[in-house]
Length: 451
Image (cartoon, rainbow, N blue to C red; front, side, top):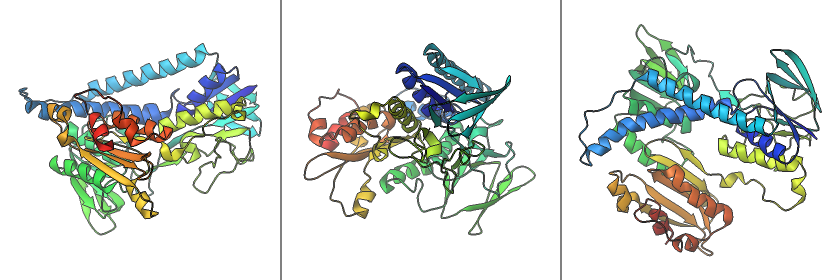
């Protein structure tokens, strides 16, 4: 069986390694970077910069722990070299794993020229492949509004900021979703003055209001200006910076602006329509629970599929696709449940959630039990001099089954894994309570919330 994959991001990578391990002949075509542009140009560099900012902001905490510090300065050149080194290392690791499993790696741009044919444009010329199964996982790119005067100098997309050429004196962040708040945290930690334009009445409009409130309080403490109820509609360059115009008449002046207003799928130029694959009005490729398109042997995954734009989700899609390609769906297995996918936001404090949200349960009139424990009561949080945030667990009052939860605080992205396992496995709060957790740790707050 010949399996051709277009796009070497988390979905394509995972599908290639798993399918090759199962005995499939795999060809992976990638035009940029093995590991995925969204992952190695966006996710990993941003988290590396956040780690640098976290190192700076930690100086404030350790001063309260008896360590005298004179503050820290950031060398952007060192940060840039560090990010490049991390990216290079991860790409080499991905490539080595694939080649060790005899996956054929092709550098170039690919497109479908029929239901079973893929053509790749490479430096050596055009190559054509005939495939029994095809996966299209070409990711997405930052959305650029028509009114944005993009120049990669003063007006930046997320991909221009790892790091920027100079540290902005005053950065205006447009977009208060996950990406936007991460950049606010990042640059505020590095020493920039930051203004965040919030189109609604809270940051992270799709998250729990209590979660958003903790983050907003921390932003305010650090001097971040929140411009709520405003939507950016224009950017004008000035002699020494720029101004951002909002739809309510307010104007924000800054040295730089950063656009964090979503992404669009890379579905153009792939020959999808010519191959009979349906593409919706927004450019996404609809899929079923096997990640199949309307053409059964052609799959779509990752950002292109219009599902949760998370690397973890894309990797799991790739795993399920590999199983399906070799016929593994003929035996009982668990389908991917997007509602149970955990997610994290790497601000300070970190934010993570999984499963059913409190507001969503109330909206449909579902009875739930909500228990909440603040980290202010955690000995480990007090030891680390960072008692911000809380653990919230949502469960079924009749059965005690864990339905979801939110965590705000140190290492929330790690701690949410406990609740993710509980939600996926249908565990009860009693199962968490009965687990003996190490003391003193932040994870003890999970048992206290479950009790």
